[in-house]
Length: 111
Image 1 (cartoon, rainbow, N blue to C red):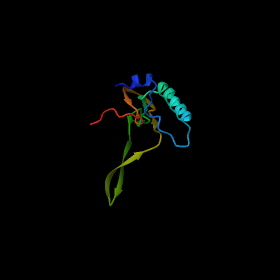
Image 2 (image 1 turned 90 degrees about the horizontal axis):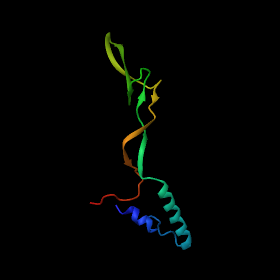
Image 3 (image 1 turned 180 degrees about the vertical axis):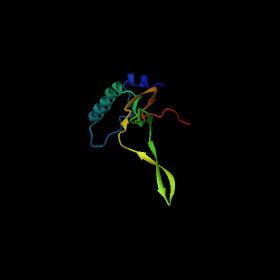
């Protein structure tokens, strides 16, 4: 909630204290670089890589299986064989609602 107000005053909470050997101007330059980078980057994720695949028929699923029949001791037994060839990944999918990136460094809610 007041994140945009604190950035406008020049305060960046993740600048760190730096090491004792770093001069103070180097720490200020690093914090300014992070501030510039934070204004161009957004904490929201709008697209993701899908884990689904298309098969030869155009069906969409995580895994595909084929039923095969095996003769064992004179009896016909059905087995499922996983298909791993001729599958096309779905690719990039646009999310319905933006999500917050997992590497976003701010605590949103504290209980």
